[in-house]
Length: 335
Ligand code: NAD
Ligand code: TDX
Image 1: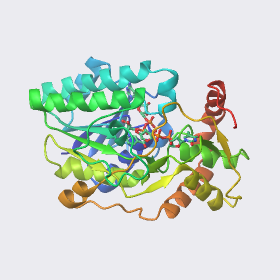
Image 2: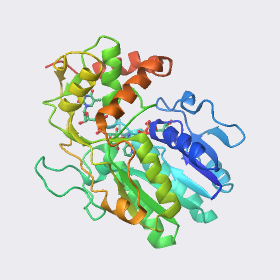
Image 3: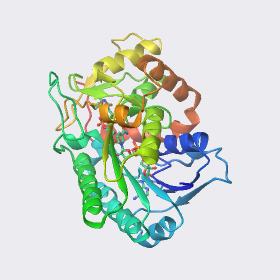
Image 4: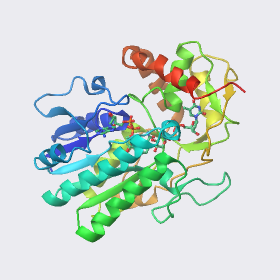
């Protein structure tokens, strides 16, 4: 495998993966990205132009997708509309990009016989009770809650159907919540870090008891590369790093790490249909592919992420005011 097409490579996790592949392999990488509000050329700055190129375009553009897939050995598919709150305000682009876009890519890899890896989320499984002892596994039934997670679940099922019906050479990974550099300020952790930098109190939805299973984006990248190189055709792998924390705990850790009073946050309007808990059992990935995360210490990972946002204000500043205005427009209020 020498040439990889990475869709959504100008987004948060895609750009982390591109940097990881450029550093750890000698592959040539082409990114196909529409540069929506969530895409940022700056996230791909400084890469070796001899081995890297960016094509600005839509994964729903069948002719463009076909021509790009024809020239590569593998496709890693990150492009998506990714934010639950946006999907509640307007589901339409989620249906288009996550379902029609994935379909368009599947038809191209079917024509060209190209290896395909589909990036998905643990949200396809719905949520768990706080005291549920069994975490999500590859056998857990699909039960998505939001327009976002329903379209991701649908895209996974398209991939499974193309494997079974047409024999495409594809794998799927479902990962837990990522944090790290290059994450859009609409998302929980960078929103709170940049709020504190701006002197705004962090904003906790509802009571803040909801649990997410945090993994550093670099660990997600190393897992995807392992699956791409050693995963079994047609199989699904869950990616997680045993990082469960409730949202209140995460905000308190961020405030403490930034030298603030850990109680200096506000409770705001809860998200409708808010999933209570996600938790991944990564046994298969660890035992079958020998993968292990490098970021075992959440506070150290958070500290590195806080430092990154402090040092890269020019990267996030242009999005900050419009993102906060969007939350206010959609009715977020301090409770
Ligand atoms: P993101 O919103 O930061 O980036 C998405 C990228 O896709 C952007 O660069 C955007 O411009 C691009 N894009 C959107 N529509 C496109 C289209 N029609 N054609 C081409 N490009 C398009 O998202 P992210 O958080 O990096 O998530 C990437 C993938 O990982 C998604 O598939 C998401 O479901 C999955 N995932 C995310 C998380 C998480 O915690 N963020 C966890 C598990 C899985
Ligand atoms: O300001 C906030 N306050 C708050 O309490 C925001 C933005 C979020 N939250 C809560 C909601 C969630 O319980 O924090 C948690 C994390 O929220 P998000 O960052 O919006 O992530 P989530 O909805 O869990 O989904 C993320 O993980 C799975 C990604 O956005 C998805 O793309 C991925 O599939």
